[in-house]
Length: 308
Image (cartoon, rainbow, N blue to C red; front, side, top):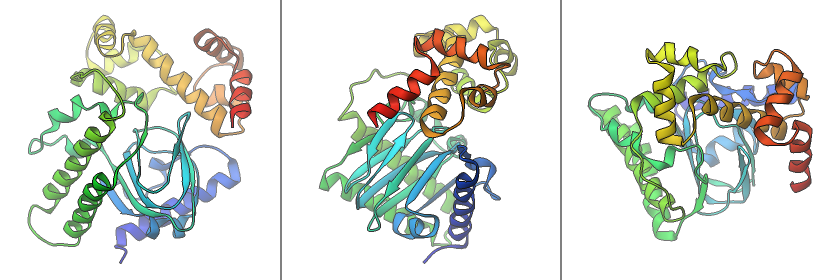
């Protein structure tokens, strides 16, 4: 049985998705929800019949975990196509444009959570800064075994059971279950990718979060350094430690990624994309894009269409 919050979320999704058919722009879901939740989760077989089996391009500040136990389909996460079949596990990082389609018999689970939900003294938040799972460059999908799928299903079922109770410390128990799910997903994804273990600096985490919020309006590192109360040179040191690139390059990478997402997921012109990303002119954007990718926006879009 759907809760009142679930019904409201489904309707918000439905209304937001309907706007795409009118303007063909990427949907900024954060602006569409009347009530912003730290987390929400539901079964796909409950949600898809309400807001549709074809998911238009959208972006959300929450991290999303989707586990399908039945059905066929795919999610396009940034530039990556992820299969959505039986026992598919998908991670969609915060602020990543994604779209998709699902078959009518799809079953599974959807969880969206805000990292700030864990930034509370009573929770082990320091662990989150060390997880490879939340990296934007991680391959965003994997296939799980029957045994692994049962473990995932057990946690999701426990989340639903806990949500329907009125016990004390309910929020803490749900937070711990979500954290358990995150750690299991981290373990599962590490079976398929070798990666270096890094401990994320809180300044780096805040810098990335600020870029997510302001990359359209502010392309200069001085703005972010001022917001973080640090010197721009210190930001450079932090970014080189974590990403082996400068603070300015970190902003440029974000702008290129967003430009490519808009080229792949929308029919916006290069000029419209330039203004969408805060460039003063299309020519300025064109030079910036070519300098950073070695190709023109039109070439990148055409190459993507040829591969689709």
